[in-house]
Length: 434
Image 1: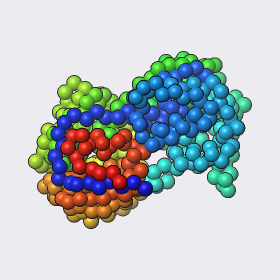
Image 2: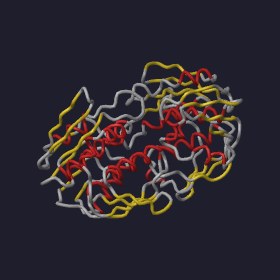
Image 3: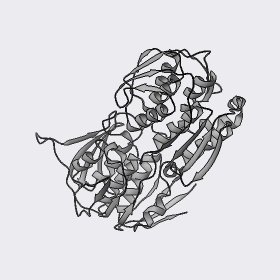
């Protein structure tokens, strides 16, 4: 297990470029299974979850070639379906939540898939019903072995249909889209997720010969085709990393420019930080965060306390709630953070309280933050990262705190943030990896 030793109190200054989007990359990599032709993907982040999925695809028989920094080609022309029943597959797939999205492509193209109950962040129950119910409606049959904790999926032929999703699940929508593109007939998906990453997946599949309309809305129509072809695709910048850097810059009193952020795909994120009193300046496709001596949380028009809550796109991503919470601890004013989706994502606040933050954990989903109104008001502490997003929030807290902090289990941070210590040290941080 690796750790970070973080000396707080350093002001950062310089330019940093966001990595490729992790959540989009997981979808795009699984989509390479839909064709036997070559698919080239660029701007892939060099992080554990992505590297593990690339390794899994290679073990499955996909020919993987690294063609440059962040650029790989994939050719799934000789898939070994027997590997799905191996112990090695079980071990790798069960440790990676993104592996659930191989089900749609495998069933669509080969009529069969196997999936161990997937792992990932320990942030509460994350059900797979939306994935499976949607693919079942297309004609697949699911069996679950509770002893082996294994799903087996079979389908002689997938047929398009109308479906109303019970939730706007991003990975569920992606899985159903990938199953539908090779199904016979027309599939209509209502209450589909419409995040930029779903839009990117749809655009990529259309470039491969799929017929997906309604892209960007919650009503998708997919006309099935017999086969898909190769293509080249570039991953968007990671909006969660962009948001993390905005909060980090303000909380450490830093002057940072974020390059090439694909601003129009950030949605409500910049305005949500402005609600915390943070200055977010747009310069073309870059963002400049000037040095803050303080920042003050807005109130609602009627004078009541601000609430920041997650919601399906175009609402605020739940992956950023941990960052908003920690950044609010040094703002002037009060805010209620409402994490609606996951019931364990706010449990890291006890460590922030140990650092001097004034936070009331109302219940598993809500935390009331009373900001100190003073940068550097937190004190150093020893912490353990429970998941990717809480891990980056802890790192932000440690960088702004007085003294030297230690963060253990940083493999969780490495799952989602590429060389984060090296990149931040280059603009003035003091982070040692041990």
